[in-house]
Image (cartoon, rainbow, N blue to C red; front, side, top):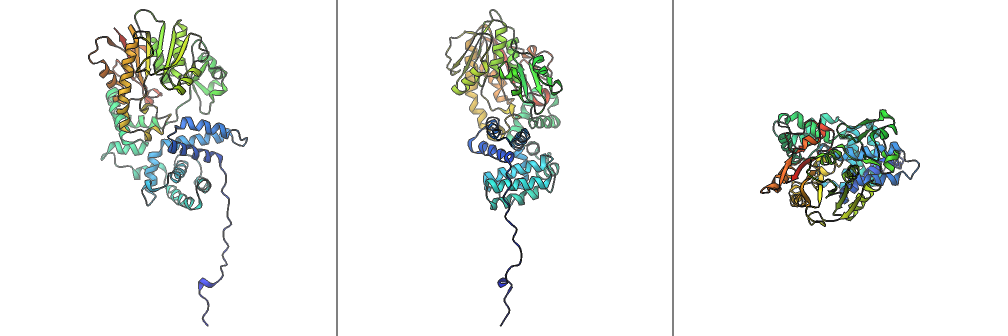
Length: 483
């Protein structure tokens, strides 16, 4: 009788015992935030704080966990374009064929491997455990295989491999290197060429795109008449703060500083506000006008940062502020930001293109219009992947309508400020030029004169701020006077 074949022999190999995946609340929270951004079009800066507040109810969830989860979320979103190119080189299928939750887990692992100091084995092991927790063992094996390929090179080496040569396609090259869509690179380059023509080459573009990927400092505003820069700095370790570079009301916190620790913030006498946003409000308040200066309007007031600063500045002069916002939930945020303002104010819910006020009612009017948000990619990194060129065109009628209404709302001799958080030419200077065509009742004010000492604002009369030159969001401002 023949001996039994190998298949019939009993196995003597010991099976590896099943290991329950380790629970990692920080990585799980980061995964949940990415899924909310992908599935619900949520903004990370809105969904992440809510997830953190819920997680912090667990006594075992530390501030270190919160900081790590925040870095994972924002770092992965900022570098998603670069990571996608690297992941695509490590898989045998188009990225569109990979289930989005699986791709999110891989992207989180790629960020740990390529942009943090976490040891390779720990990054891979922890991410595979996350995959086993939120997916199943099958996709977890795929995640493991892809991450091991990614771990073979550092980020610079990978980018050299996957980015097209600069000489063949400069926009694509920079887009992959700095994780921006090609159309955004092109739009930013066009704008930089108009505002900084002497320094709009490759080096300047790399500095701008790199600044978009930097984690922005938390900047506070000391609302005048209610708080001071000195109060905010003395309430913390002064070594952990610095005064703003341009705004006399700004204080920058060191990494890890928590605004909620400050009594002035809790009492609404100070708040979190980018320095560029503060500069826009301060410039409108400083613009010269003719005649009375008693009633101001913030025509697109949500979520309330500029309105709160304008309200405080108006109160110092005995002026009143009307803050108008079209969306009721954002109007409630404005009301909350203005609580305790020392001067008279009113918050109303109204469509700025169909105003609820009489023409010529206001001395100063600000419209910070809805836009693509390309100037705030540091704070909303997912916007670069969510926006499309068509979105810029879609905003155009609203932006023009709001500016026309703002001019109509201003009395002769009064001042209008048109602002956007975008440097895209089609949302900034082009809008103002189009609205002013054929109008004899409006003239430009040189906005540079309202921000003395601030360099790199362009040739005027309007101004453009830049992350890499000013350390602010890329705010645009045009100041106009009604004749």
